[in-house]
Length: 170
Image (cartoon, rainbow, N blue to C red; front, side, top):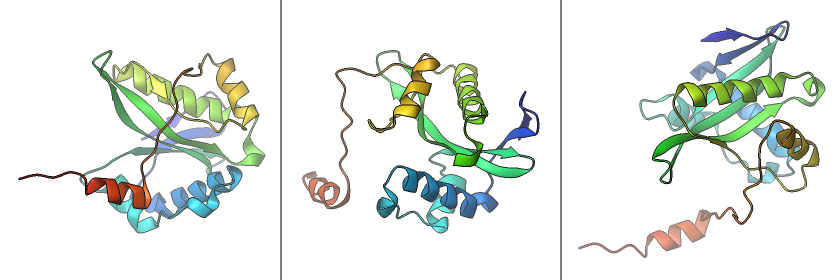
């Protein structure tokens, strides 16, 4: 899949297994921007297994300007019991710093919104770090809202392993 956009020389395409190194590079660039590079443990092998095997957990699209990859988005379905319909959770959206402000990130996000509508999803959701004012302002400008009263919770690492042992079966 390769989609032309209304931005001259900018296309969006589906990532392929050959893009795993590129995807990992983008993940690291995003993590560095978010001051979280020390948390990245993903490998190209893990990405191949989780993104391109028979049991895929997420989708990735790549944005290319003048045939050069400049950004990506990684997303997957979630589900709303309140609406009884799926949604899309946007795990990552990233555009390299030198390409920001040209509408490419907005174009990628609009494409994901279009996919959500085509797939009969009721929402697109994502998280943003509370210090990332430029992104928050951009999200407000497109109509996104803060989910007041909700706080993200995470169980991972040793805590996840420990709590999993709480399940007992016969």
